[in-house]
Amino acid sequence: MSARDRSLLHRVFSPVTLGAVVLALFTALPLYWMVVNSLKPVTEVGAMPPTLWPGEVTGDNYVSAFVDQGFGRYILNSLVVCLSSTVVVVSLATFAGYALARTPMRGRGPVMIALLMVSVYPPIAVLVPLYVMAREVGMLNSYPGLIIPYVAFNLPFAIWIMRNYMLAVPGGLEDAARVDGASATRTVLSIILPQVRPGVFTAGVFTFTATWTEFLMALTLNSQDAYRTIPVGIALMGTVFEVPYGMIFAAAVVVTAPIAVLVLIFRKSVVAGLTAGAIKG
Amino acid sequence: MRTTTGKTTGIPAQRPPSETGGDPARGRGRRAGAPPRHDAQRRRMARTGWTYTAPSLAVIGAITLFPIVFSLVLSFSEVRIGYGGFVVERLTLDNYLALVRSSDWYYALGFTVFYTVVTVAAEVVLGVLAALVMERLSASRGWMMALMLIPWSMITVVSARLWAYMYDSSYGVITWLLQNVFGANPLILGTPASAIGAMAVADIWKTTPFVAIIVLAGLVMLPRDVYESAEVDGAGPWTMFWRITLPQLRPTIAVAVLFRILQAFGVFDLPFVLTGGGPGIATQSLAVMGYKVLFQDLNIGAGAAIATSTGLLVAGACLLFLKVFRAQVGKEDVA
Image (cartoon, rainbow over all chains, first blue to last red; front, side):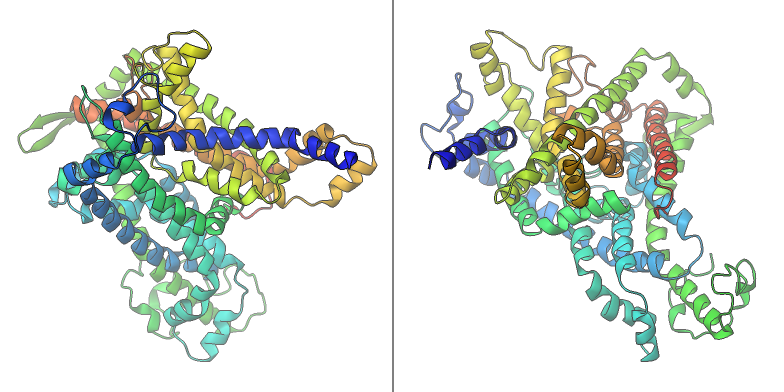
């Protein structure tokens, strides 16, 4: 038994285990701190020394975030904007990705490079024109006023992802469909689309996460309280003199938890997307 | 472009009159002996391709390309703010001349580049280490991956407020730790050097998982047999890492680095919420400076020049990278 004990001891204190523990703690402790402080009474959130566990667990912060601050409105706004953007982006990207991967259209190379350049161009550099355009057409503080730029800025990456998945679909599928007399659009929808379902998930998860976390455009275009998205709502909570951290963290937990669960469920798509962008792109 | 009508897809393969221009049927000569019917088919497919791409390109063109050009024009304009918005008075180089004379802009440029280099370097080193650790985990690897995806998927504004709370000088847990473990009495976000460091740590916390997951995916795909034969030859783990693992991971790491560099050049959310660019202008990135000049000082021309300088930095880095990357991985289908 002693040999086994020694090997166990070796396992427990190996550099890998040590590294894993450090990694897990570094990642998890701030998250723990956010959750714990959302459950503390207001006075305890500002206590020094800080308490590692709430003296009294309370839901007060959640109540004040949602009842007093009306945080539910921001969540609704975010859901409307992000879900609409995601649906539009994935639909457009499916067809564009198909065209760029599987048709002999000319100029594919330049289009792909242009898309790449646009997708990395920093939003700050287009903000004033976007603001002016939105104001000219009366779209400041509206849903479409944010959805349209979100679609435009997330399309390029989604097209890249869809194209990469389309490339991997075996050739000749379209020919069979064409022989059967299916139109091109019908072929894409009923023959190709089912083959690239993981790509649709990946592009969808990426677009949703990107729009869900986007701050700068939302702050500039939709600053009015009724149209604030979650990041803007959380950034503007409180004043210079008083920051209601308990309430902020209550809101933060509510908006982080579902996304974390989503990401866990679609973990494979997310990882595939990260690496598809990385290895193929 | 001829194919924006959107309904041409159903029209069968009659030769369109406008097709004579660029691409004659045998154009690319890929299949020399292909029958004519194949060419007609091919041309129809090409037209369908443009029809499918047109809506996306139209949206992208109108909402990104047009503003990029508009912004460029503004950066060369003298802009006056009036009641009905702003008016472009005349074209001028003054905005850029003012930038070149502005010590704030040099600082923001230097800070942005410095911050990018430091955080990306740290994230790559830590990300590779984390990936090496995760690769050796068996049952817990999935859980570790799940845990690390949480910060990555978090709203940056949320993580910025979380770190601001932990750094707070009167009730922050990190301030308290530094006081009680190291006997220091820090104003973490109140002094330039520590504010920059604090911002970097918050960034590393949120973004290292991104690098780690990409690198891990690359690691898993490395062929095993090379390691086995290296082991037979008596190579230690250190040698194997430097001689086998790292060289093969290079393309993977390169792309992760590109993504990170491009993001970091435009960094806005974190400094805006965590420090407001302060103390003073210590953590003021180009994007934060651009935002303040544009929307707080309402100095449109100057702001556009700052924003354009950020865009040029990013575009330049991107082009440079593509060039290097293509030279390195010549055979891969980059475009």
